Length: 272
Ligand SMILES: [Zn+2]
Image (tube, rainbow, N blue to C red; front, side, top):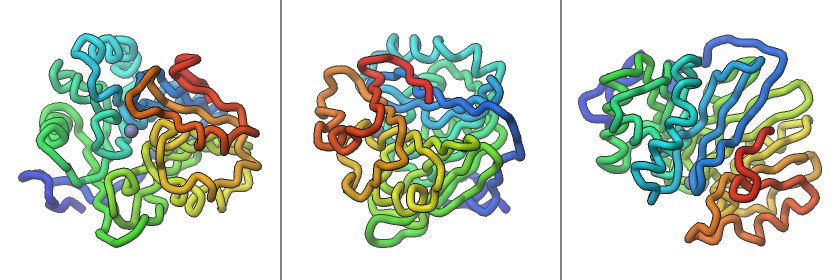
């Protein structure tokens, strides 16, 4: 089921070719790593790291800062060989992958991403992932549509669902979004996607408690007022101290004032 798309000279597997491997487990844990103004979420099953959603940090991070963040996790990742799912190609979500490219090292067993590469930096990282080290590379290509695209289920197993956009109007609302499933709680990993998408595709269909990693570091992500917070227990914000963007916005955090809200900039790594 391979096809060529806009990625230079590469055979990639399109969205119909990707299925998450079957897996089961009792204890599902999500860690929101403290990577400053960026995103990196990890999903552990019975204590074993299985999935990493984004591998980024501040777009202005120095080489040393990038190396330090990689070194914190590298030996764990190398042993666990998790699947990497990239929400979208903004550097704060894949800066650490660029750091791996510089080291020519890669601990991931598979790479799932949106197959529209916006610039040379992303193309170089993609080529590194594809050619040198990762055997399984899955490029998800959204159709082009106007307006904020819906999210639809791409693939799921007992502990994880990956949603893909069925359209594209900007990089921030045509992303892969993940939900980790516990018996009584869904944990939504939202990248920089829009509240409307999260509401329509996930929240309005879930009867479980919700733990939510806020989209876009608590900044602007569509219309937060569409979100009913009744079932949302814990909220995590992956955000850097004193960032230039004013994230998280007080108007956004105010909407979640009935939930338990934690920011990585205040508390470091957050377990959900
Ligand atoms: Zn971001």
